[in-house]
Length: 494
Figure 1: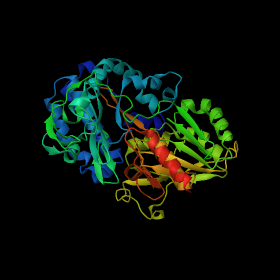
Figure 2: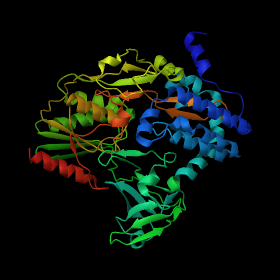
Figure 3: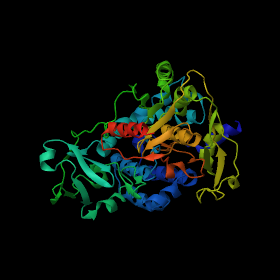
Figure 4: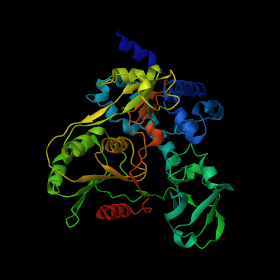
């Protein structure tokens, strides 16, 4: 057995017990295994403490007490859902069995590559057949119920913007939620860290949730509302699985959208996501579009609502064809000393190994300055492909849902000057290697999480500071065209 195999066997424990035979003892063992691994490896405890006021490791006894009182699978699963959500990272989640189909493909990457092959073992596959109906039910309980009204956060307020069954007559469009169970809404939101990812409103310097659902406060929560005529009342909204809200912010559904304003010499391209599977098939279409607007003054690239994929699609299909020079983004990854995440780092096909001295930065988060973190070079470079000769300027539209690999694209554009950014601060967590996986030894449930802290060219945590636009504009709620019209108006004045 070589050192790599020895490390895998020592870090990844999979016990023989079948999930159906688990007792409270095995669930608690799983929790300790999960807690200790995260305690030593997860990079964002201190970032979240600065924003949200708590450190996840302090919640240990809270979850152990709940586990002691739990008696059946759905109760145990609800506790793990809460504990994972409380880490407050959108890449960190309980990994559902239907998402593992690719991981178990015999000739696929995960079955050929360690440590993934050990994690997604036949035992784990068998366990997840067992868990699928139970997890589906658990997921439905947690996420499947909505209120009769759709509540969205916008410009500091929680507003009723849609609904079912005569909602306008009962509550009214634009009605504000000002309190929950007698507590001011902003204070109440602070306690929802186990039920949804809490975001940060940079303009108003406060936390927020994109939307409010029964899982946040309970289906019987009492909401104090203020209607547009000033009338105030306390209500309990009906909730049901039949209330379903698709596409909360009403983004366009098409994968690619192009528009042209020949008189203004402005082209427009919207990209819904940067998934690898579409990279090659979309390339020729995009090159054809770029050639069509080669002599235009501006190209607007819209990635609002684009939640990522990978770097290669935006590098190959957007940056390389449109740049005339080599562009380099100075990205970094801060890895803790934990042996689990470093097992993945060292065994990756493109292992990052170049250590950057901390003295090279004017600023780093205080936790990164400690001996617990090592900073690695994660510079990303794109060479021109010389396929088109676009001579105009590029504008990138971003918003709070611009996330993951697309957040990295926004950062690349801002740092290199490839594009000028319009809109809102992005959603974060763009600088990262692929998420890693941890299998709980008894249940064989799989948890995915971000392994290293993304650090941008300023030395800040990308997850904490995000990417801020050059031109800030909060566009009208659920009105995607508003940002486009604002941008065109601004460009017309230049």
